[in-house]
Image 1 (tube, rainbow, N blue to C red):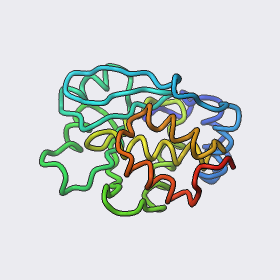
Image 2: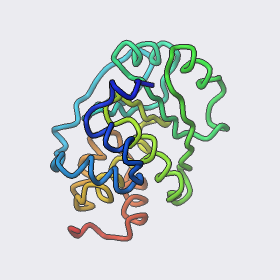
Image 3: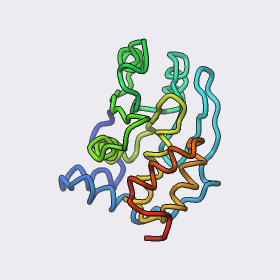
Image 4: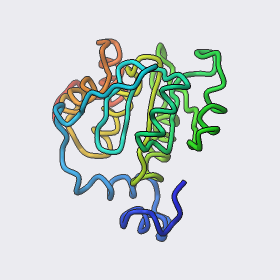
Length: 192
């Protein structure tokens, strides 16, 4: 984790004022403008599928140790794993920490409705690291893209359709995941 003096201007304000996560996230996203699907860029690391990057985020499928090493070389400082512990059979936390990466396991169930608590915890981690590169992954990038779509709709005020378009560019490939995003947001696509 970076020292306080290395934080960006907004990061220092959030830290110094002890702003709440929703307020901090809204403040950090307020001047960022709307995103377009073309803002999401495909990337390639050996040992990971469906990798894309947008702003300070990297969204992907399951990385292996080699991919975590490449993430570190690319400047990633934080890893958020959205898979449940029963979904992977290696010690990703130890591998990430051995590379000096901050690691969080915040499961989002693929078959169940999204949990506001889990999505909120992801938002909290992201808000605490406004100047750091963050890798958010699941098994295929579907759940990572879904979190991003929900984040864009709730924190940036994007319409559900626009947020889903960006979420698809960032990893959503299954219509069932898009449906879960719509269900979670309680909308059928109309602008906010």
